[in-house]
Each structure stands twice: as structure tokens, then as C-alpha cells.
Image 1 (cartoon, rainbow, N blue to C red):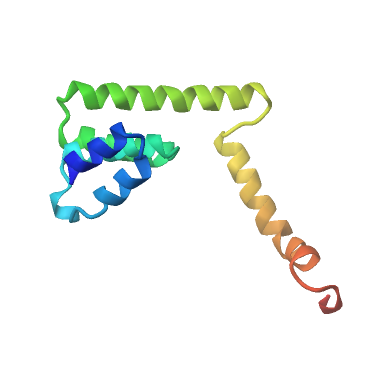
Image 2: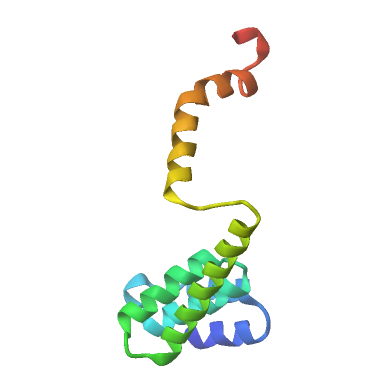
Length: 122
């Protein structure tokens, strides 16, 4: 299945490759499987999933230079994305996540009544 998935990726059919890879029993998913899965996920625009897959490949085969290089590339792309967002005023810091969580907790019931429930109910 891994060879078939590689052929599908090379043919520009990353979603087909993911479907093929999902047929592999989890016990048989080795480092190469996770690496090929990461490549297919990148092709489908699933960068977060790809990062998790390549991390797993590196855990299973820590001495593989190719896996490490892909991990470095995906990690750097994530940093670049975050920096671009921060340059535009967006941030992903823990303080803002806490603020969002508190805001949802405090304002959530009011927002739900205002937007989710029919007007006659409140």
C-alpha cells in the first residue's frame, strides 16, 4: 500500500494516497508509512496532520535524515505562518488563549441566547 500511495502522490492524487494508506492496519504503520502519509497530507493541505505524522516517523526512525529534514521544513513553515500572522496583529500566545477561554465562559450563555435561541425564548 505504501508503494501505491507513493505512486498516487507522484501522480498528484494525494487524497487517493491518503485513502490507500488508511487501509494499512495500525500495527503495520512503520516510520516509512508515517513519512509517506505526511507527504500525502501536505499535498492535501493538511499541514498540522502532516507535522504530527512526520514527528511520528522521526520517533520511529530517529536517525533518518530525510524524515528530519521534512520535520524541519514543516516546523519552519509553521513558524513563518505564525510570524506572518503576528505581523498583522494576530497572536497565538497563551495569554490570548486564556482570554478567549474566559470570554467564552463569561459571555457564552449571553451569546447563545442572543444568536442561537429564537427571540421568543428569552
